[in-house]
Length: 372
Image (cartoon, rainbow, N blue to C red):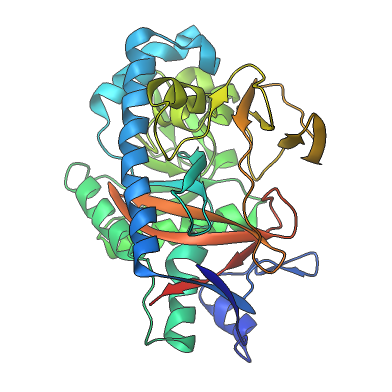
């Protein structure tokens, strides 16, 4: 694994904007950065793929364990939602997308930092933008990336059992979420789905039919939401979720995997796994990372080394997970985190975010990759 300098395409901004990446720059700082790229050996790609499959299997076992043993309090799941989540686990077979975040430098096994199981972003960049970069800049190389094709297959599988219109929901003010959910919508359309876009703010509920409805009072039977389950449960309409007749993607049981408390269950079940870092709901000895059980983009993450705060600032009202600190080797003063995508049950590709600091945040850059 190497970080290489790369010459940006002369009109790269126009190119990526034409492909849907309108958030390539934040506050004057690059988010999409093609002045560098990462090169992998084929065996390193194999290692990432194997880790992704192994962790996916372990995560499913962890969900089964939580539900079977009724460990709801660990995840702060209110009693009103527990049977609903259990039923979802027993009946909702379809899951479209999730992203494992790995610490990996090509030496030793990938280490799981967390699982973005419910509302993973960075999908457009990983699936499409870096693929087109590869075709323009080093087409003789390969890329660990079948994300687009796997998404289409995932929707085809879903549509075989649900022929209804699929609604795609996100918040109105967040351009990154909007573009990611509409990229997903485009893959559903390519799979043959009839689709509609709806903002979370437009989502309605008809108490007479006990059905969620769109702005035109049309019943919603299937919906993909890029909006965290924990937020959904706290919304005024949350109380209606348990009896409304519809299919949600991602399914409600994903609320367990999107909560970092799952890291402690995984460590309890698989303490000898080479892919896991020691995790606990209580402080652990030695260097550690404190993480909110529910947060996005590195918010509230704090690294403690030798009893001192090395980076970040911890704050959380959703509970705290303590994870063994795994120092990630820097490449040209940059710390990379590898997002490995599970699509339709397959390890489908990776995307890389890097930062000059130690914590990957909302403004950390996305950098393309290739292997060969």
